[in-house]
Length: 486
Image (tube, rainbow, N blue to C red; front, side, top):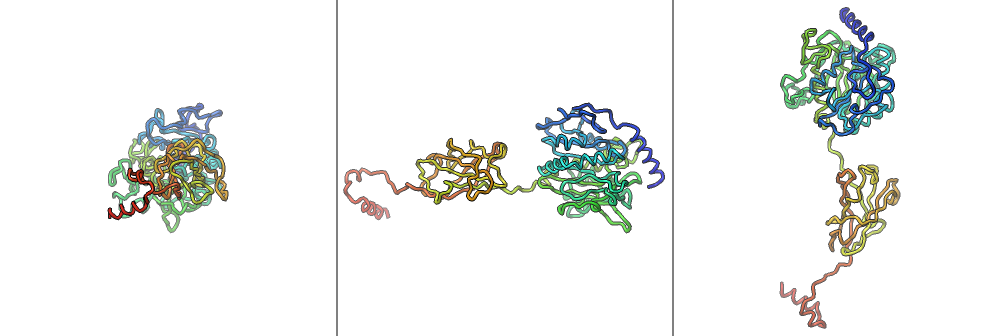
């Protein structure tokens, strides 16, 4: 770091340490930029939105205890630049990190952003302690696995203290910026888009570029694309603090999107990566992306190169746009394996004899590790059940809360009764099934079971001739008729 850079950084630290980043936030108010939340802080509406967003836009929640690095608040500036309005909208909220464990992540949240723990002692350590809390980690893990998108900034300034911790990433092992992984790129301000960001053809500006490269307009090769120039720092400072190899082990399915040179001889190591965790997406970086030295689409007099405090950046603009897009949510959705719910017609009996015209037919619907028949949301709504081709409704007898399987498998099952006469089963049918849905209204895929119809015989309406000659051999007459027909 140059002497000028050290003087500049020390001046900023003095400003940050001596001046509060924001006014005290009253309980329930929106938090624009916050230090430690005040005593008695309780999130209230509209701080938490549990129902659907009124604007029908993806909801992003930023968790931070301070504005990263030197109070620039560039994450907020970038979100405003792409259309998020903290003051009036219901799709952009800021929380203290302690909310992750104290209140969890509200329903209908699409994206969670955790900014860098870049403040000095003790604020940065407090942020890490709160983020590392087991309850916070469990809530983050559940949020991602359910289909959420997590952006986690693993760059910090805490590694100058030997053995200091860093943020934990769901699905990964270890922490970044933990001594000795608190490392700086040898090519201090330069970053490079990794091959995966360029797509299969290895070229920028083409259709197969990664969405984070293509930018908000969704068109490759336009002015809002990322490139190897506009992702570099405008100042001779560090583009990243640490990397995603030293001090952390990402899952095997991780994709590297951006690298920087580390060591001597220099080796390119990832500073931006993403991976799926069940149905959700985790985006990790060690980039000092909130730092005032990053370039942006809006210039200022103080930073004519396009960098500056309280201004958006190229990288965060594309990162946030991607995280809030369908491309991010679809990246890990895949095709869910269809769960088929097993049934047993006339349980404990075989063959399953059914007289199509009358009687009650019992059907067992089996629970399993993949399907809880009694779940109040995704379980079986017996009022929607139908049996047989005609979908005859269930009779009033329904038995819940017991394991009817043999041998017992530890999962509750259902026994439901149907009227055979309303099932639509015809003589000669060899199998039957059940239809129905969950309490949410989602259709359930049921298996089928074999049946044997009984009480059926070759029957013809009596003819006048047969009434007149009852004592004649009807079978012989039938055979003669059949021969004549031939």
